[in-house]
Image (cartoon, rainbow, N blue to C red; front, side, top):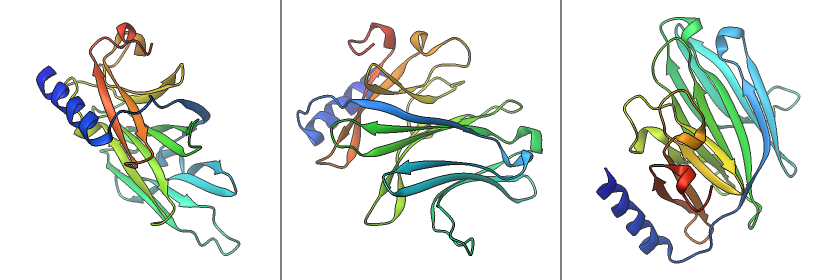
Amino acid sequence: MKKALLLAAVLAALSFGTVDASRFEMVQKSIVQGAYAGVDSADFKEGKKTVRFMSVSEGANDYTLKAISKPNWLLNFDTYWTYSVKASSPKAAPDYIIEQYRDVDTGKYFYGVNDIRYKEEGRRAFLLGFDEKKKSMITYIDSDTMEKPQYSAPGTYVRKGSLFLGVGEYGGNWKTKPAYKLDWSPEAKWFSYEYFEHVAESPYW
């Protein structure tokens, strides 16, 4: 695993060039309940634009989180991103912790979407950002594509201006868990990352 992560870091450095580390701040944090509780939503502002994350049921045992535009008076809206989960019962449907981050240097906004489940295994975290040209959300980071422990409880968080994807097992706090430090490249319009087995021992903690 360490060799693979080292190779990923080297490739990232070659692709993105030498850049200063990104600096992030958390702007807003909201909890959106699963559709077992009915439709729930939270609004986030990006200047004049509003991004709404809405939890809905799309059918029997099918629970979906959508990122949409703010509905107009006819209740019409654009759908930017969807994430669907199959759950054996309403009580097994996930809740979501959604955090809005801002890159201090560029002013660009990102969203950490953290899938929290209580009754069944399987947690997932995403890092999203709005693409103005495509008018949609881009998934920059998906914890399911990252190397991590078998029973991982991934989640995004900011500490001292650094953005992380924590990938440790459930329980404890982020300090005791492995993590990826995430850096935004405005030139490449993508994230590079660096893995730390003990994040508290990294120079960014």
